Every structure is written in C-alpha cells, then in structure tokens.
Length: 433
Ligand code: GDP
Ligand code: GDP
Image (tube, rainbow, N blue to C red; front, side, top):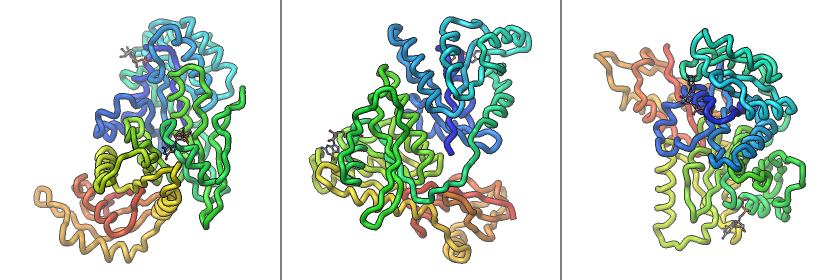
C-alpha cells in the first residue's frame, strides 16, 4: 500500500527543511545524481521500518504573487485528495498568519489526518509560544525544530500510526503502471493495446478520477494496467499540474509491480524522468523504459545505440534496464513493451535455488575474493536468496563489515550476468556466519 505524506504550509515556515530531514537517510544515494536533485520535491523516507513517500508541496508553487495564494489553496486541496497524511507546517516565530488560517479552514473540511507541525521551536522557551496554534482547531500540535531534528521522532511515531496496513492483495494479476510526462503517448499506447478509443481527455466536471485500472487479457497476456494519463486538465493553476501528476504517478507506481516509464524520443530523458526512475528503483519496482515517437527521429545504423547509451548514462548506476523504441502511431513494437514488462515481472518474482546460486557464485568469488583489509580475509561461505517481493540475496561470511561497496557492485554484476534480472533492482546483504 502506498502511504504518502504531504507537507503543506505557506512559504518560509520550513517545509523544505523538514522534507530534507525526513528523507535525509537516503541523501547519500540522492547525492550521487547531483544535478537532478535540485528540483526533487518528493522522496522516500523511513521510520520504524515503514517506508513512505514524502512530498514537499512548496517546490511546486511559483513565487509570482497573483497566482500564489490560489495556487497554495488548490495545492492543499490536491493534498487532501491524494495524500494519506498531511503535515501542516506553521512557524512559531511568526504566530498565526491569515494564510495559515485559510489553509487550516480548508484542512478542517477535508477528511484526511492532519498534523499541525509547529516548526522552529529550537529551544524550550518557545514551547509556550507554540500553544497558540491549538486555536487553528486541528487538534494536537507537534513542536519540532526541522533544523536540529528535535521533536520529529515523536511526530513520526504518530504519523506512521495513521498508515494503511499492508493488505494482502486480493488480485494477484501482475500490475503495470504506465507513467511519464504529459504528451509522451501514454493514452495512445493504452488505446492501442485495448483497441478502443477512450475519450480520456474529457474530464467530468467536479469529479476526480483515480488512476484507472484496466484488465488486459489478450494475445495470451493477462495483467492489470494502471493508467495515469488524462489527468492533466484537472487543475486551473499551471504550477499545480506537475504537482498533481507527480502525486498520481507516485501512487500508481507504488501500486505497480512493473513501471513502464515512457519518454518522447524527441525530448529524451529529462531530470523529471530520472527522478521517477530513481523513485521506482528505490521502491524496488521492475522498470521498462519506452522511447516513444521513434518515427519522428531521423535514423541511421547507430541511432539506437547512441540513444541507449545516452539514456543508460543518465540512469547509472542501475543500467540493466530494458529500453524499447516504439512508435504507437505506426504500431511499432507496442507488443514488445508488454513482452518486456512480462519478462521484468518474471525476473522480479524469480527464485534461484540455493544449490544453483552457490554452484555459480562460489567459484566466481573464489577466483576474485574481496580484497583483504589489514591482513584480514573475508571468507564467503554460502549464499541464499531471501524471501521477498523483489530479489534479495544474503552472502554469509566471517567479516561482513569488511566488504566494500565496490565488491558488492561486482557481485551484483555477476548475479546479473548469470541470472537474468534485467529491469529489477537487486539487493545484496553480507551477513555474519
Ligand atoms: P519553506 O519555504 O516552507 O520550504 O521553508 P524553508 O525550509 O526554505 O525554510 C525557510 C527558512 O526557515 C530557512 O531560512 C530555514 O533555514 C529556516 N528554518 C527552517 N527550519 C527551521 C528551524 O527549525 N529553526 C529555525 N530557527 N529556522 C528554520
Ligand atoms: P499522454 O499525455 O502521455 O497520454 O500522450 P497522448 O497519448 O495523449 O499523446 C500525445 C500526442 O502524441 C498525441 O497527439 C498523439 O497522437 C501523439 N503520439 C503518441 N504516440 C506517438 C508516436 O509514436 N509518434 C508520433 N509521431 N506521435 C505520437
């Protein structure tokens, strides 16, 4: 189940500081991709073993004053619709402003759990100033300092209690989510697959549609398609279009087994696509990259290779991902997308027998063991695949703490070379034995 925590509030209360704090355990990973992180406003956080997505609404609002308050109001409404929990951040140093009051009014009418987070309570003396925020009429308040992190643990303890429990899925069909920026061809591919033209660009006034689930059962393939297209006209404020589609994409993605990330060949892979890719990767989803509108590209014998290389470079280090070049309008390789999604789904569910795993991997390890550190040798005794929804392997050894990241990468590559895990994140753990 997907749990989304939305951080709302007016500017300068500390939303992005809080966002950074909640997602900071993952920062090391994020920093590897510097250059694409600057416009990242959503990410994965973890508390007491629960993973959830945090979204900082602040990043989506423009600073031009005329649209500004309307944009914030609309954003709060979108957050109420789409998020599991809302963190309403206010600032103890300013007290309650008109905009705070306005946001509180909207939140009171919504049906989602709201936590009033009083930020910048950097020291005990400010605790008494914070009590004014009870008058927002949203119940308990949580005093924190995003800067130092104080109070955030108590807050998160309560936040995770509101999460949906992981429910056992009643429907066991594979779930594929088709995601990507507007106009890349998501609706077109779905129409071409299901063979009838759904008029998805006409939103029904006043209603909101959840991502649509389509039961596909043709040509020997049966699965659920999760469609995120057709949602773009919902908001009136331009700045919120992206916010809205990102919320929907995150939800669809968390539900999916395999994420089909669609690109427009003319535009290529942009920062936003890379963000979606990394989120899918961190959530251990299967991934297929589809480069659509291939008909619009002038090609020679090297074009595919050059495109593939450029894309893989931007996806590094997780590059073992299928890339399919399609033209939906010319009906080129549309079924190939399904075949790839099926293969990735199977790879994600794959269980390698322990004997086979050891027969293949132990000789490799023997001829290329982990380098000795301070005269100590790491001896890997045996390997098993751990039960889970995505591939995880435990390597039992005497000194797990001496195994370096570079060796883990080597092992991962060898696993990928010997067993097909294309399109799936693989986790490797070294454990004491
Ligand atoms: P946003 O616009 O709501 O995302 O706010 P920011 O996270 O950008 O923070 C606005 C300002 O408040 C920045 O100068 C932060 O350094 C500061 N700030 C954020 N959290 C705290 C805090 O806990 N204590 C103090 N004293 N300042 C903070
Ligand atoms: P969505 O916003 O991702 O759902 O994109 P649409 O499916 O609505 O497609 C946007 C536009 O791109 C439409 O005008 C489509 O006809 C066009 N389109 C979709 N696939 C292709 C393709 O393979 N080649 C070309 N040339 N145009 C395409």
